[in-house]
Image (cartoon, rainbow, N blue to C red; front, side, top):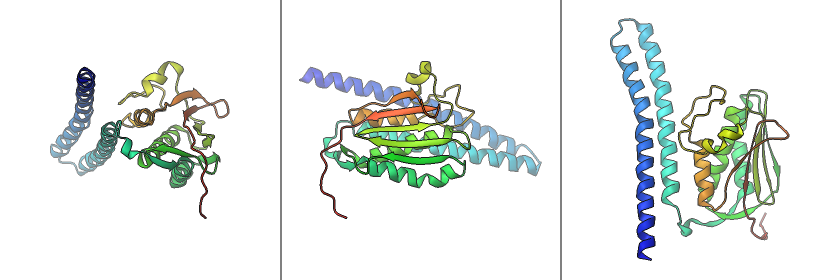
Length: 239
């Protein structure tokens, strides 16, 4: 038992060291860009250069804030690993519909047809916040990479959660890489980001004892993300 404990401890420390190294590398880049943009503004007497530099700094700061938020989410998930006290009965269908509703305007701004299909209720054992974050990340990725006028469909039937879109998809040779933190794929349509969306999905599904499968959508031509859950027996619900 002691040897197993020490092995798990060594694995945890090694994983944290790798993660810290990745974080250090990723934060160094935007901070260097900020320093360059600031130096450009300070060394120029032209107001238009100041304005351009400040606008660039705002974009860089937004990206850095997003990166920091995603890193905190990853840290929270890893910190909860194996914490059975966080498990509770969660209506996954409700979480998925809520994620769709809160992203309606975001999809509408790109003229994307965002919809939900499937069960009215599907209770699973899990962490409510993490499952909400899972649905949010899947939809955010789909909306981000789907071109204007496209389609994003969220689906949940008999515990099988699917997010399907008409975006560029992910080549089969890159699908395993896409689940790694800080991954930037070649065919992402020129979209910026911190490369943590699908890494968060992987950590959340790992935490819940399931997995995310990346497939080609047979209906929409883009990416199909499929995650199996086990539905609990139905309970009587109050109105």
